[in-house]
Image 1 (tube, rainbow, N blue to C red):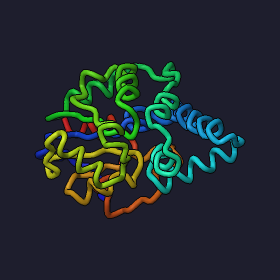
Image 2 (image 1 turned 30 degrees about the vertical axis):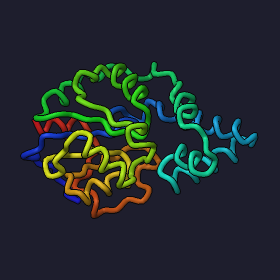
Image 3 (image 1 turned 60 degrees about the vertical axis):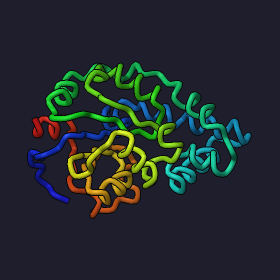
Length: 222
């Protein structure tokens, strides 16, 4: 991992995770999603909140997302789950002019690669007022419900947008999601945040750079 981030040359594709990456975990938006996932499981199985949360995190750790575990082990319809967990209040998000200007200054295109739904991504990008700077969204449905860090999902993403890995950068708050990108030659950037699960399964060899400020990093690339 390189401590000093230089201006990266020859990049034409900038890939961003959505939740806790394009906005700060401090707004607690993902906390709402997390709570709704627990509530969905509690209602589905008729169990208490603590048991539901333990099961939720077990699926997350073993399958990449809670939804993937529910699909594989219980045949839960994904549309029902996604509609429920993304029915959240976005009032904590405000337009981020600095981020929008930083994204607009980048050479090449900006893509969002998320384990959420496209509708959720669209709502978040609109609230941040950066939707016009994003050239494409690859969501869990496009990934055939195989979440990051599945290699098959990442290859499907590369194919969908005809990405040259050697000319791409990927920014993620969850270190383990960078592993397939690094294996294919994408420059990887781990955004260190306060999110408790960001360091799970961290593989240092898969991280080219660590940053604490996304806008500052992007401005260095302009």
